[in-house]
Length: 475
Image 1 (cartoon, rainbow, N blue to C red):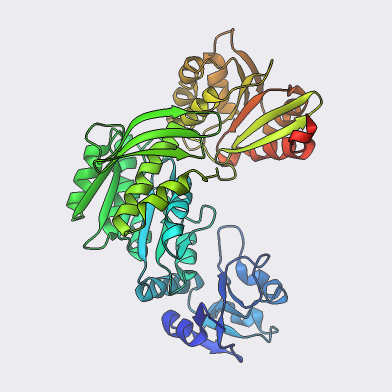
Image 2: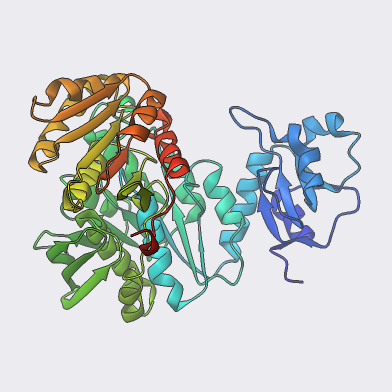
């Protein structure tokens, strides 16, 4: 049996106290009693809403090999006759185990942050590095104070490449996470007005993202978006943090990895690029200029960590959009089919514009329409009315004539759109979902885009539930 961790290693790393007859080792790490797999260790983390200790019995019933619990909670678990490692604080113990995973690893470690494109770039890195070695990457958006330690603790010792997404909502959140990860390569995809309600300016957001440089290894690398207005600030921040190697990507003529020409198709794109002075043509399986730019960042990583660049370029052709982040569905309805672009996971002004651009490049069939289904961008604070109204400009520039809106903040966009744009507004997400179910026509292309907290995933789920996948046999 190959253990992820032996119990002796776990006890030593976490300064834990064994209780009961512990197994020799565990095959994985879980913090969710519902999905814990047989043989895994269940960490009973106390979160903002739930306490994992309340679900310890469920974890054992689902096959957990042992529990990691807090000393203070032990009396309440007295009736559980199961193997346990008892620690002072479960989340702190998980961080120590993550630190031990990083210390024992010989992998090349990459950390990704940015206002937009973190998860997409992480998945792109997974695609381009996988052909060159064993790879470990965070699942979903495990990018916060518990997601990063979990991902680290799950990293097998024989990993060649480790990829970590690091997020934040407030200043000071990235620094402790990146000091845990200690990446050889740090990427900042972009700086934009995300979480503006928690910051006074874009510059403050850039400063918070620049915390990622504080954990880069002494011989490490920073990769920055040369097209972003905060590039010079970030470059100075990287140098101040003593990052010795700084690389850039983008359309800017001074970018090390440069996008020279781009042709977007409905479901893919082609880019002609210069990779540190070497010309190349990229066929990318996902549409969008922003995707092509992030592909350059991924190829820059591949060149730094010694991956096979030809295999990395070839892997881009098979790239698929992530659920909630541009994933496409071709769905059947009487008289034909329509295309649903699910970009419902999150939204800020920059990613909204990117989604509108993707919709503009799509080609409806027959009498079909391009429809932007948009919901509130959250955490915009005092800037909310302004940034929502400003979405009218890219919508009009893209020639989109059908806009369906929901949420209180989207009233500003409704007011900013002219009469020639057919606009539907609903106060609640559920109301818009009901409207959408009966308003789809054959040939339509819809993009659904909003912040996660608005629940726009319900609109996607409703459409997927009512309309089956379309196949050529439906013609």
